[in-house]
Length: 75
Image 1 (cartoon, helix red, strand yellow):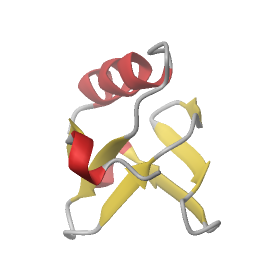
Image 2 (cartoon, rainbow, N blue to C red):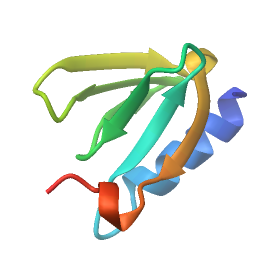
Image 3 (cartoon, rainbow, N blue to C red):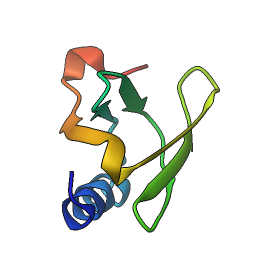
Image 4 (cartoon, rainbow, N blue to C red):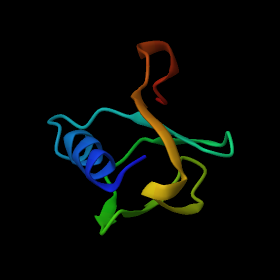
């Protein structure tokens, strides 16, 4: 994913009110569910996952960012 597309899409999700969880699919097939606000700087994201694990990634590793369906939103 290109830097500008990545940052625009992530900002759209970060600043949505109320915050709505979404998922980020990586080039290696890994999927990160973003269920709380996060920090982003220069194409890098850092967050704590739903399993309380520190996750960080850059725009270069992202394949697609997509909203979660209501059935898959963590409660």
